[in-house]
Length: 165
Image (cartoon, rainbow, N blue to C red; front, top):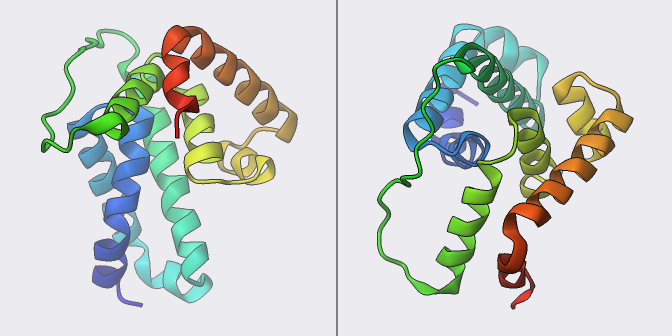
């Protein structure tokens, strides 16, 4: 697989992951571009040593590392904005649910948000998330429990949205 093919087929999914982690449209775009740029510089070595699932896992790991390192650098002086990016009008309960979940996720600390996204959006095992975050599986379980409890508190009455079909 050539890099251009990999980048064009994976960029959309990487953007979804990045956006759910950071909650900012432009930062998510930057994260994806930086991730792909870092992969491009070592593509020959990456392609020789990994199959497609391995390349996907590597891309997610680079994206996660970039996100967490940016969060550490931006801790001081970060301005929180309640504005969401403009989206095309799709309407319906699905978009309400999506906006509610994105808003709730944005209130979690970065590592907690990353755990929730990787465990429930990406459907990774506890062990896989632990490897990506370079922590123990018990730390992932603990982060997951605390994150879900915090989301329940944040969502309050809006939790009913999650239960509707």
